[in-house]
Image 1 (cartoon, rainbow, N blue to C red):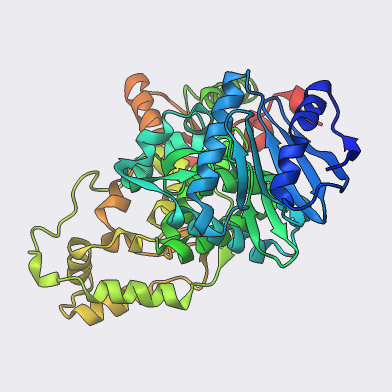
Image 2 (tube, rainbow, N blue to C red):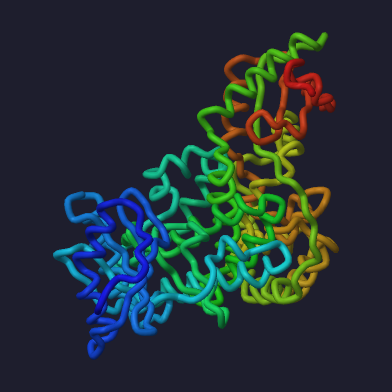
Length: 487
């Protein structure tokens, strides 16, 4: 190499690095040339690394330099080096051409393209989200792994940015039941700018300084959070396509992953903190009592599910029918089929809270065939006075609504559950979310004359009602909103 014709690298540390190592890099790029000028420019800079573009003799590579005197930078270098080596055969990452542990730099193939954050738009959202999900699934399949069993409720408790959210707090039952069998070497980074789209449309992951072993699906969760933040009005589209792509690659259950992302990613995306949800509810209670002639002594507060309806997927309807046909009704006696727990009519306050929520808990049945098991089907058979499994199955199918809530149970229609209570599972009939349990405990403790039931995220209330003497009355939202919050 004769000289560095163009050197746009910023600070003195970067200049020193380039001057010290340009010859070595040039020799690696074109071993037989010694008289060609080199150009170097900065592509990205962070507190722990500088990414440089080297052009020499028609060859281009990306060099990422981590200062050797920084422990954090050193750790990032080792993680990125090991991740690139581990994923080399997957064709999901740039090729690691060469590296220097002593100097703390990695040289990788230059990806001619754009980062995903700059090119994704609403028109291509379905296709792009599916492609991202599939890339994440293929990446996880190719990753080194360790057999470790666990559940997402326990795992996410270690991460306050997820577990402090209202959505996770309310859906811990689902998260406990949603388990994983392995941890894989993950990107541990959901930034869309760290996915590159090459000119031929192929996706590549870049920037692995945070790479760690994480449960299968962790990268999917982080990416979903980023997409939902970018396209908040297209949350359901993003999550459905992302989960479908991921599960196409991994063979996992797309409906379960959609529920998981709705529960875990959406709340975290908008930082709906459970540590702050009680304060808006209490403020609303005080505001209501100041404005109303019929005060409330207890308040209940649930999330609010925005109902977006869709027609049932024929494949999912068929899968439900096949599931029902496989249930062995004769294995359950009439006595065993009787309901357990929370029998009878639920308290009116519970009904009011559920009405406002509009069925967040029903999303837990996504991919679980409405929790209908042999015991439930036997109880349904007794209710409709039929014995043949096929007739019971067809009867269940007949109750499917013409449209159901997107991302929720097939029986979750515009007016709630389309099934008669006698045909619902024990899980559905007896389930009480944490918000409901907390409210019912306060009612038992305080024996109030009136109860205020709220639904919404934080202080963004979407439904309000008042319960007194077993009667439910709608409450105008202005009655629970302080005057200074009105525009």
